[in-house]
Each structure stands twice: as C-alpha cells, then as structure tokens.
Image 1: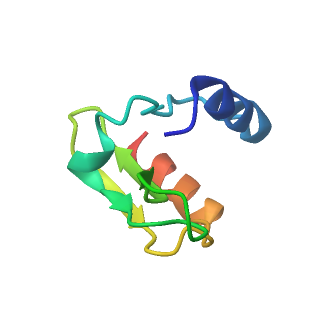
Image 2 (image 1 turned 45 degrees about the horizontal axis):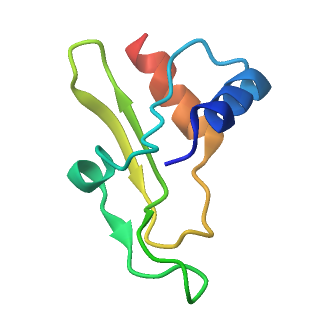
Length: 86
C-alpha cells in the first residue's frame, strides 16, 4: 500500500535491481493477504505487512505475511529468496 515514492526510497537504500509493487489503490492486497482489522486501535483497512517474491513466470517462490504489523520481515532472508529466482 506504500506509495511508489516510498518504494523508490527503499529500493535506493538497499540498491535493489528489481521492481516493488505499490498497491496504493488496494487492488492486489485483498487477493494475497487481506487487511488488518484495526491497527493502533483506530486505523482500519491497512494491508497486512507482507513480502512475496514472484519469478518471471508469475510463480510465487517466497511468501511472508505478518499478523502483527509491528513485525518486519528478515531482509537477508528476503534477499536470499530474490537471488534464488534471478
């Protein structure tokens, strides 16, 4: 759900050479992860924190979804999954 600009900053910070999906209009999230009921007691409709690595054929090769919005994915694990499909 983060904006393109947020993803671009993240991409630049980590030196990534692959695209990140910005689902700002909330079109893809319901198909993959769904939403948190509430976040911080009052925010509703926030997409679950998730990471998917999808190969060039569209096959999901890695999936991480957190039920707790405060938990971040293991960056090294995600990058290892990316390298495995490149």
